[in-house]
Length: 90
Image 1 (cartoon, helix red, strand yellow):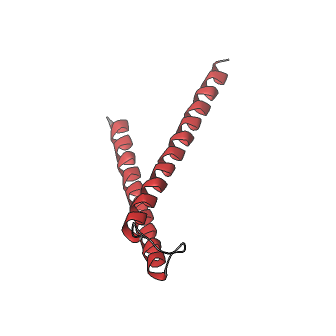
Image 2 (cartoon, one colour):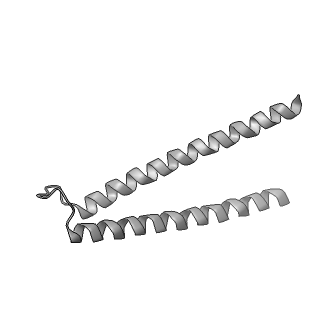
Image 3 (cartoon, helix red, strand yellow):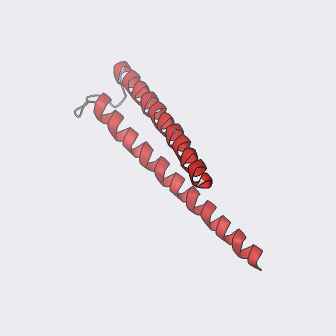
């Protein structure tokens, strides 16, 4: 019976982590969209389609945003692993 409780706890933790990850990705996408739109697309536009300059700007903005997000994630993971290792030694 205790094994089932532990499995439920682990499953609940995994579901919580998955939910948080979805929230974080949604937040990142919304921020990226807002930042790149403000940067690359004028507030008053005359055409329904993006022009070449706007498309290039959007591509570069999104690429940079995702690259920085990835680098930050890797750095935070490394710091978290260092903290875990220090806590185990203590």
